[in-house]
Image (tube, rainbow, N blue to C red; front, side, top):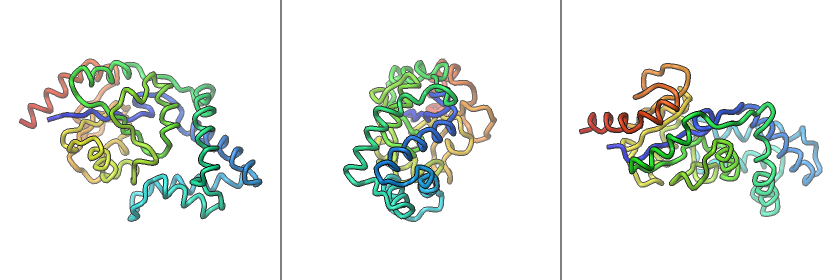
Length: 245
């Protein structure tokens, strides 16, 4: 029986140029950290790239959170301790005050049609609603992007972040950890996402996915635009529950 609906964020609830956002985020953070450490901002591009790649690796065997591994990798590459209280406060201020202003221009962030209705529909159906965004950013960055999507942290029982996850999508361990934190089994979750690779757990672990992207992945239990999912969600949940019964 479906008890929780997990939404992806980028290009699921929020339409944006994700690579442009990442580039803008890294450029701004690099300028800030370079000023504090008295190094060239350009010298921090590789440490940022290497840190993102490290947490995204699907063959990880460590027991670190994504945040711990990111910070460790970044420090090894450039000597800047992101977990130092002063540096951490600097980054938190940047993400809280500056990053929300990155929605315009080439990033072109705006809500996906039907996203707000779909989130509201989950709660109306008596189900738990959670945000299972790929945990490569802090909660502050997630909050900024949620705001662009027309939703907020209050709309979700749980939001995956750099700090509360130890793997990235599509690793089954990421999804299992997320479900554990929600207090449900993966078989009781419906994932809603647009990425035919990342929004389907690998290896398969009982999680079912409703696909709102442009492809036709065979593993999807439903395919279509978010606006249609918002209308058909009660019917979809009933069908999955009937199949389980």
